[in-house]
Image (cartoon, rainbow over all chains, first blue to last red; front, side, top):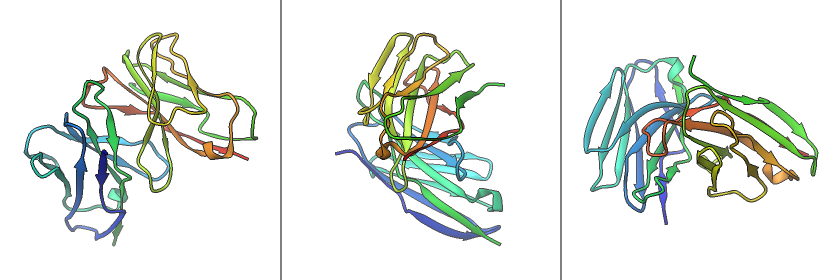
Length: 111
Length: 113
């Protein structure tokens, strides 16, 4: 079956660094996405990885290892507004380009 | 402003009363889809549309219908809502199915009593 695993909840301190992991098992691979979702709001796109390695975008970075079926989202210099859920999604490798979503990681930032 | 607009944002209805949730995008995107989001579960796709008059079932299509008569609009229809359809619904669009970014509407919180 196809499966995406990420921790349910994490807590971090304002100004610190946090890493949110995502592991996946899918039929093929056409890219991995990270989305941010504030409570009750729409998901918004953060990053896309299709090749191995680290993609940096300001305070946020995303890493992918296709051989390990593993990704992480790294958030630096945490701010209170980063309190949100972070959704990992994988686009399958078949012709349908199906998006498979993880249940999301709720990140709580404490002062 | 590029956006996906859903209406209504909140809806409480009774079992069996037909309802429609509208979705409209102004980005000339070909691909549109509907998701439901429930606690502890990832987003689950209900239906999707590759283009005008082309729709197909997602992972959880039972109890839902859609139509795509125009490129910009993709309404979700619940002919006879039931309590297990109480959920948060999102419409999303992207240039094409293989595109790397999807744009989501603000969500519709539906309660069926």
